[in-house]
Length: 423
Image (cartoon, rainbow, N blue to C red; front, side):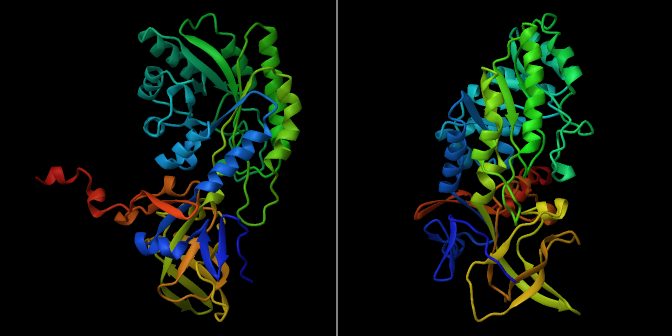
């Protein structure tokens, strides 16, 4: 039976879906489909809740831009007091364009290029998180050539099973991220040899969409033991970085609240006597957004129903690569229409182009609008131009107003500077 996703930011009034106080159908009359729509109040409320949960300790939240790197989204978090966690020179550029001070930026990623490291040092970001001994040596070399000292944290892989999808698990020894505790100790103990590096932090990030607090507790305890060993050896770190990864509800997951998260790890964090860093992304944005799509065609192959819509894997990739669930519901409820079970599929030339399979949904006809829920994280940032499709518009709703924060790509966008070759 079709169910509606529970939300106080996306609600129905007279059977019509609203984002805050704006009717979704009215937005897409101006923007067309497919279109991403975000609730600014959700962003703000989620951030404030997270911030308040850790009010007892010195801490900084660095919004993980990889979840949703729209400039207006980044700016919303900056205005709330957040920093930005960036994974590439492109995300660094975006954070700076959104108004971030370099001291509000952490440069991460498992495979930074020489140019990315150099850019981080030129801008004097708060710190660069290193993920291998070779990277630390390269950072030292580049910093020496620039006659500067790099602030560096080491990402430690605590070998903790986050019990999440294997593609988004990052804290096991088999994952590519970070170094093990023994290697981390050896690198930290190289401090006296590394004249152009100052170790300022220790970091972990065990995965994404984690729905149990116990992996965090285990990882924090392991990392805190390492922190204390270093402290006894005279290596004083000023940052302890927990990363992100708190799971959100997409379907019927049993998740934990940020208050429960805080209660579980605060005792350990208080004993460290340093500034704690968090890097939430999905937690702050996923359920702040929807992807609105129009039904193009309906068809039936034997007993199989299909709704062919104008959104595709090029707009929302998660279902195709993770088998990820996104709730789908009508923008306008019509109680006279019966429910059917159908696959919701896009127009791209791939069998893997689907948004949902075997889904109970209101019977639809050409022109009906559907809302793909929980699309505010890892949606637009993973969009592509496969099949020469134009990427969607993005809309930010604030109360009874909305703004186009990224227009739909034009055909000229697709050509970019290729046309120069033809001249």
